[in-house]
Image (cartoon, rainbow, N blue to C red):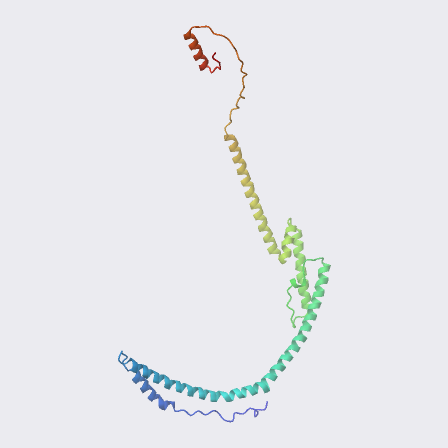
Length: 270
């Protein structure tokens, strides 16, 4: 790069005599601050305060003019620099980066395709149909070799084969297979199934205990229930009419009537 292409011809020169006015400002502000603020003088204090604020505002406007004068040339230079230099470099870098990424991706895709093909062959030969290439979680980079990728695939399938052999030796292998296929973690599968069986057995014992208690309660209820005596069927007697004439004294007839009444005999008095 030619160092003469960008030259600072003249530094901004700021001539200031701020220190000369500092003492005057301090005296003026101290005088205003020393004023007593009462109902009689409050308007004077407000007026002095407004004067100070106006002076300060004038100073601020001057400061902003100086800042603009300093910054404006640099902003113009930065705009030209961006257009003529930085934008061109950045565009070239982005284009080259895309080319590099595309080329590297082709290499990664080739490695992945070869590793995937090897996995499918190994999976078929071992007769394992419930795993997929993504289960391995390979990190395919530019630096990893194809040989290393095949070793990782072989190790993964070999581990699955060992887990299957272990499950086959267990009594509850069907349930273990169902659980194992969810996450391919033999330790987690055994722990999950064992805990599930423990809960099932616990529930069975609980139900059996409740059934036994209910049976005992039913036996006690039957034993304590009082036996009611059998009621004899009510027999309905047939009524007959008997006509006869009684000849007796008045007192005896009265006694006969009383007898019939007490015995609840039905009779007709002529």
